[in-house]
Length: 120
Image (tube, rainbow, N blue to C red; front, side, top):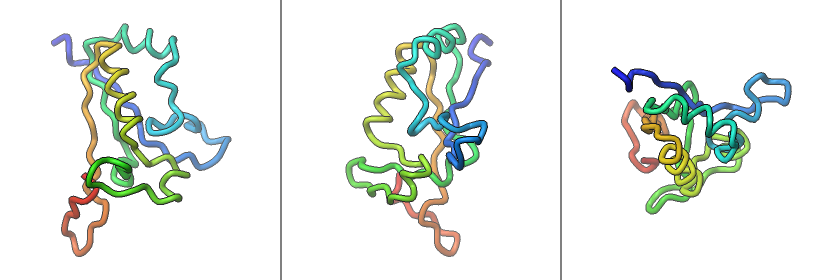
């Protein structure tokens, strides 16, 4: 089907400036206003854009109503998703004709194997 194509924006742990993925974290450094990125993503529509990846289970959704604030170390590692960045992601998908598939963090606050819903 025409919607079979998909690609991923990753939660990336920006470890060093020499890291090949530096400045590519979806929550912080990826420029969703970049005209070239918009044009390329639009050409893939009606693809699915998955936001998540390897470090999604370390992400914190900070500043949402009833939620938690992002600790400083989470912000520094670019794992903090804020309401304004969420709005940018939604706008990017609307502008490019992509469908958004979002990876949830199911590990935040787990103790004894129990899920803690305070970060959802």
